[in-house]
Image (cartoon, rainbow, N blue to C red; front, side, top):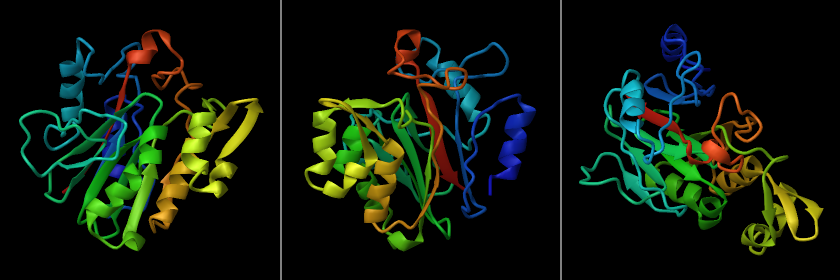
Length: 249
């Protein structure tokens, strides 16, 4: 079920931000922003945006402390939000066991994935574009949690949808050369071009890591212009980023 108290706070603030609908422990809280900060106002978490500090202040109204922001590199490194950092760590995932420490990832077509165990002892966030998925970022995040994978819950946030994400043969090969059954996550369009289903690829990777409970998915950042930035859509939206965060009380 969604976090009712957090949902109420967001609605009262006039925000259409997303609260995960998943059976997480009551001490686990999470949200994923949209591009909107109320009527006719936008919010952008791209580190290059001139008002990124303003965006972070708005988010701080709903989280216990400043999130750990990452220097994302489309890889599989996982950092700890419980360790003091002089600068944003170069990583594509972060975990936290200490209450109040906030894990975060930024996305603008890539897939944000949130993880927790059923007892709410650890939380994690992963930035899962196709390169990160192929590199094993989800498996690395599950492993870093150091709990039984069967106890892990996953939530898939907004990403480019399967009818919109056109890729080349190199992306198909990155998944299917080692896992031929991943072919089911691709639909041929024309010679050398495929539609890739990031959601299906993530579910496949999580299931392979032993995670049985996977929630969320289904929203397309490219086609839903009113709600999301999209790198693939281009223009001013290409630089825009949404934030997805998770923490435990």
